[in-house]
Length: 131
Image (tube, rainbow, N blue to C red; front, side, top):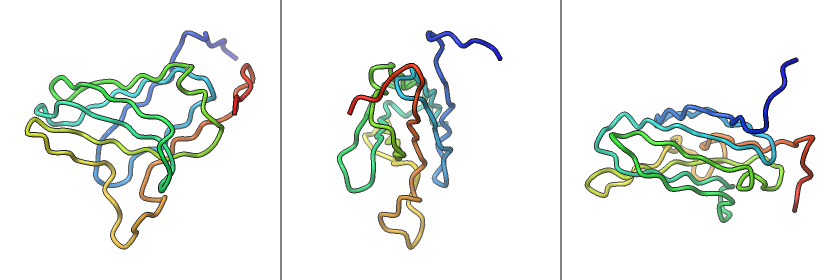
C-alpha cells in the first residue's frame, strides 16, 4: 500500500453534458480540485452548487473561465461538511450573460434527485465530523 501525503488533492475532470454527469466521492476534510472545460471559448464564468433539491445549498464556488476553462478548488476546511450524499449542479455564464445549467432535467422528472449527479462526502479516519 502506498502512503498518500495530506498535501495531495483529489481531482475530477468535469465534463459538461446536458445528459448524466459523473458522481464525485470525497473524504471528509479532503482538498478537491475540479477542472472544468465547457467546450466553448466564449464562456466567461461558472458556479458549482452542492446540496439537496429543495434545500439551501451547502457548498458553492464561483470561478472565472479563460477560453472556457477553469478549476474549482475546495480546501480541506470547505469540505468539512456533514457526511451525506449530496448533489451538484454547474451553471455556466456565456459572454452575452446567458446562463446554461448542467445537467439538464430528464423529461417527465420534475424535481427528481436522479436528475443531478451525486457528490458524496464519506468518513475519514483522521478527522471527526463536526456537525
